[in-house]
Length: 147
Image 1 (cartoon, rainbow, N blue to C red):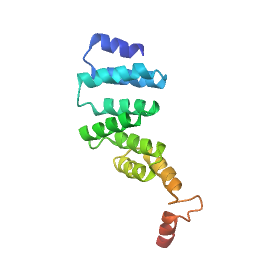
Image 2 (image 1 turned 90 degrees about the vertical axis):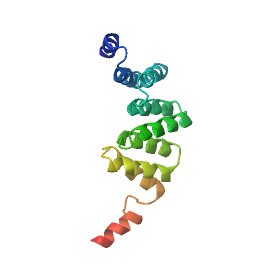
Image 3 (image 1 turned 30 degrees about the vertical axis):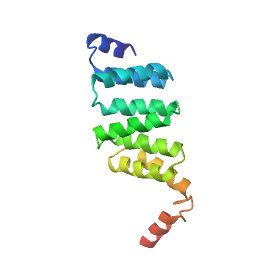
């Protein structure tokens, strides 16, 4: 935290320092402070996709799902190849019970290289009954045909 404060003192226009300090506040569950830092990062750089995604994650933690949805969407609009924003959007949909939407965004995150997405996809598929532990769901049958 001290390093981020120092970076901000040295360069008050350093949007990334605000966004990263916001992540630290969020990890400490100091959500109001985190949101303040993300707001400042966005004020300094309206095209900073990561700050929108980070703020969206904090909104999701606070169960402010519409705000989170808007921020994840804005992050993707700014950077269509930002895998973490797709992952976060997929997680939001999964956490709100919208599994089909979740699967769509998690698959996009995986295509873009997000390392967490594959595990999340498996969990969503299981929730949808596409795959179960015995592999007798749709994908399990599909892979058995290929053998």
